[in-house]
Image (cartoon, rainbow, N blue to C red):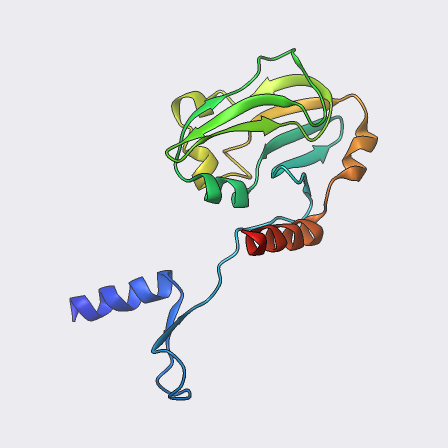
Length: 166
């Protein structure tokens, strides 16, 4: 009984479903395509960073899609407070068990806060990329730069096309 419950919960977690009632031509199990979460209210860069603009502050991090492709994040390098970031320029790096990737700023501005929790817990980027895993908060120099970024629907389509091309 315990094995059946484990198998059932594992199948649910992996989004496996029995297709015994379907055509005999279908495989015994099918795997539904899981796509990383994309949140409403955020803007996204084609380099997979997100921006949440609230008043005079823009919070920046990497998307769920990006962290999923990176794998387990083990180290994060971020700029210091009061430094400047420039649109489409590197402001830090994320090191994972797979690779090291540069973090590209989607907007220009002054860094007003850095997520210091990431120094001791870089895995927050994996477990909570949009909440606890944010990277920096910026006072934008030119809020109009946000208009060049993608909304959730455009970003989802972008990721699907990018994944299909690989």
